[in-house]
Each structure stands twice: as C-alpha cells, then as structure tokens.
Amino acid sequence: MCGIIGIISPRPRDQVVDAAERAMRAIAHRGPDDQGLEIIPASAGRTLVLGHTRLSILDLSSAGHQPMRDCSTGDWITYNGEVFNFREVRSTITGRSFTSESDTEVILAGLADRGTKAIDPWRGMFALAWWDLSVETLTLIRDRLGIKPLYYYQSGDELIFASEVRALLSTGLVPRKLSAAALESYLTFGSVEQPLTIIDNVFAVLPGHAVKFCKSQLSEEEYWRIDANARIAQSSVEEELVEEIRPLLEEAVKLRLVSDVPVGVFLSGGVDSSALVSLLTRASAAPIKTFTISFNEEDFSERDHAARVASRFGTEHHEILMTAGSVLEKLPRALSAMDQPSIDGINSWVVSEAVRNAGLKVAISGLGGDEVFAGYQFFRTADRDEARLRRAQHVPRPIRRIAARAVGLAVSGNRGTKIENLLESDDLNEPAVRLHRQLFSSRQRESLLGGRVASSNGDSRSNPVSAWMNSQMTRCAQADPINRTSALELGGYLANTLLRDTDSMSMAHALEVRVPFIDHVLVEKMLSIPGHLKIKQGRPKWLLVDAVRDLPSEIVDRPKKGFEFPFKEWLTGALRDEVTASLESSQMDSIFDKDAVRSVWNAFERGSISWSRVWSFYVMERWAQCNL
Image (tube, rainbow, N blue to C red):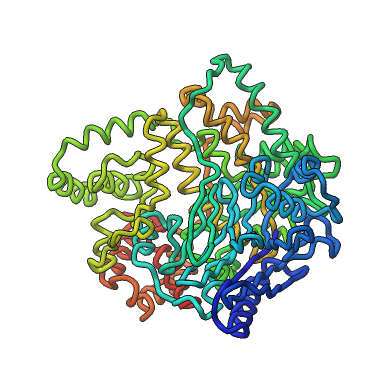
C-alpha cells in the first residue's frame, strides 16, 4: 500500500519536477519505507513525472521499488494497492520472465500485453497510473468498488493526479477553491459524492473506471459495474444458499492474508468483525491479533462483547480505552489527516494509530458487511419506504413543504429530520435510501449556503447529484428494493464516506486496511440473489451468520449497534468550547451563513437534532483552516 502522484505538463521541466516533489512530501506518510521519482521525456516538449511512496507489504526487497519500468516495452507504472491473486495471474502471462515477488511487476506486464482487459482476473484493491509509451497515453485505473482513491486535475495540456486531494493542492498548480456543488453534496450526505471533490475542478476516478489522457484529451472507460438486477436462478433452499456463499467468504478472507508482514483485525464485537475473526482463525496458521476501542460511557462501549469473541477464538486481544480528554488531545492530528471533510473517520484514525503502534502494517476490517448482507434496518423497510415515496409523489410540493415545517417543529431528533427531508425532497423518484442518508434538507441547505445553491452549468460532473449516482440509480431501477438499496449503498455511503475515510485515516499512520466483504466476486454473487431471500425476520445478516457457523449466540442475537464515539456527550462537555469557537470563526463565515449555523447549534442544544449536524460544520471549518 502506497501513495502515488504524477504530472504531465508542457511547463518547464524544473517547474514540473518541483511541483511533483512538493506532492511527494504531502503523501510521504502513506509510504515511509521507500520512495521514487522518475522524470520521463514526452513528445511536444512535455515532461512526465511519476512519483511513489512505498509501504512495503509484498516483496520487501528493492525489487518492488516504484515507479517501475517494463524493460520490454518501456512502459511505466506507479501503483497503490494489492492484487492478492497476483501469483495466479502471473502464471497466465506467457513469454516473460519475472524478477520479483511483487504484484506490481505482474500488473505492468499484464497491462502492456492486454491493456485494460488485463484487469479482468485481478482480485484486490488498486489505484494506478500506467504510461503506455507506444501511444504516449497516461491511463489512471481505480478498483471496482473504489477501495483505493485516485484524484486528478486537468487544465489544457496538463494533467495532475494523486492518491490524495491535498497532494494535488500541494503542487501549487491547482487553485485552492471550494466547489459549490461539493459543498451542497457535503451538506446533503456528510461527505462529498464522487466524482466531485471538495476542490473545484478536481475529480475522483470512479470505481471500476479507467481515465485516459492522450494528446491533451480525456476519455473514460467503464470496465466493471455494480449490477443489482438478480437474473440468475437461485435456490430458495436456505442450506443451499449458505453452501454457495461459504466458499466465497472463505476465499475472500484467505486472499487477504497474502502478506509478507503480520496482519491484525479491527474487532468491534458486532456480527461483521466477529465473523471475520472466525474466518481468519480458520485460515491463518498464526494467532490473530484483534483491536477494540472502548469507552467509559457504557452505552457506547462494546468491550465486553469484543472480549467474548476474542476469548472464543483465542486471539491476541488489545483494548484501547478512549476518554473525552484523550479524544480532545488527538483531535487536531486526526482532523488534519482528513483528505476531504467528512462527519465520519475519527474512529478509524484512533484504531489505526493503535494497530500501527502495535507494530503492524496491515489490518482487516468488516466494512461492507451491512451493504452486502443487507444489515441496516432500512433494508427491512425498503418495500414500505418506496411505497410511501410513490404516494408522496401525488402531493403538491407546496403542501409537502408546509407539512415538513410542521414535522420539524413537532418531531425531534433524527426521525423528524428524515420525515422532513422526505416531504421536502425535490425528486421523490430517488430511492428511499438516498433520503435515509440525508444530513440536511433542501430548505436547510439553501439557508446554510446563503441561497447560493450550485448549478450544473451544463456539466454533469458538477451536478450535486453526481453523474455516477444518476447512472447507478438508472441501472438499479428494475431491481428489487433490497438489491437496489444494496447497490446504492455500495456506490454511495460505503464508497463516498466509509472507504474514503478509512483510507485517509489509516494511511495517515502508514497502515493498510483490507476489506474482504467487498471482494467483487462475493459482491456479484450476493447481488444475484433475490432480495427477499436475504431478509429473515429476527435474524439480521442470516446468510453471513450461517455461512460462518460458529459465532457466539450473544453476538448474533443482540441488537445492532453502530461503531461511533459518544460525540453528543463530548460536544456538550469537553469539546464544547473548541467547537463553538470554530462556529464563530471568520473561516466559517466565508463558507456558510453564520446565522443558519447558529440556528443549527441552538437546535442541537435543545436536543431536537443529532450531533452530526453540528459536527459537520466543525469538520469543514477545521479542514478549510488546514488546506485553504
């Protein structure tokens, strides 16, 4: 796991190299073990610079040094990620001799031989840039589910790319201007939806896509997509479904043990992480190291459940106690590690720090379990929620707005906000899960942005509801509600918040995080199963539980509990002065309408809205202070 940067530009060579070196320093935390910078002449007086900072996981020798050149073709690659089945892939490439045990060499050889068709057998997570010398084309490629990030900025003949948005800014070649569309997206979902980023004219390479830059022209190719339309005849016999899923789960976990360094596991005490511990214990010859965050606030702490799982499977268990004081002490460093503002991620920073301090470079996470195995509560109400949306379409919007204001006054907390968002929605054709995820209603966003709501200006990429999600919704239109919800969560909340935050917060500590539940083969299989077969009353994620077989009953049967810090208590206690000061800062005044922000804070103090609304302002202000 690493960090990558690159620039192709007609600017003077020294300017390009200086800018690339600044970007390299900005991502040094991602790869402390080695680094490389290659200056490659191109036609028309252009200079190509490729950079790489390395976290050594596979083939720890210098043979894995990057950027890497293919001696046969003269092609170059700079690559972040892991293709776990690279040895199997290597065996299919004929007529070549390999000099390392690095997956990078295999990937480069495959691209030279087959172009983007080489991706087909890859199992893993990756973001890379490939320079095809024969046609002088720079191709940026991102993995199927968007586990590893990759961003780019184009201005005329110049293209700049990097693993982090902040690295692009550090070049000095990218204007530090907030995107109005991204701000609206952030207020809607608590993170910016791809391909938008928080910076104007900086875009994310979409999951399952390759972006090509040739002769100053950008083109985009989709090599894989999330398909939620179950067309494969499936058995309705529970035992047969379980037997189909079990080997895919075991294979996905086994692949993610491929490493030349020790591996640990994030253990929350919930079904997903407990299932991972069970599967890993069977797949690994060495003892598994598990890590759990605990709190003095018992309503939030899962230490007892995690300890039971660790004892059951004989892991080497580590517990990290967090208090309001310790969070306050760590908060500046955690927030400064955010590549883009997000209401999530602080927990990932804390647990990643603990795992890295224990001497590990690799951890395995249960991210994706809820999205793939239909674990969230709204999966169980998907049919009913969509029926309500269809009925609401017949109510004129002015009447819905009046009703929304009444609900906002009468119903407190998240439930009231969700109902208000539904009644105020401009597009009731959106799937219900999109409304479940909304942070602020459209009326609230207008107020917070001072009426400056973003306009698409004819460019689909600048639309607050990104072209990516529009295409996802179109593709899912004929799927059953449960599979549609799963697909939209995979391409939405998981990709835009959970995976993005996990990458930036873990790589801040040079820790690689692997996510077996979103192995694309497993995802394809689960999306081919009709939705109603995934839901069993009173048994959340029953397919996962039965496939694993040996989870403790007290873990399976207890109510679902999300992994979050007790921010409500902290925001009214130890963090209150810090947050209220940020809400009154001049930086905040330049982003949001200060009166509207105060109104939200007052609502939080009255207990009528959740902490996440206030937290979103604080995070945005801190990010702007660090990066603008």
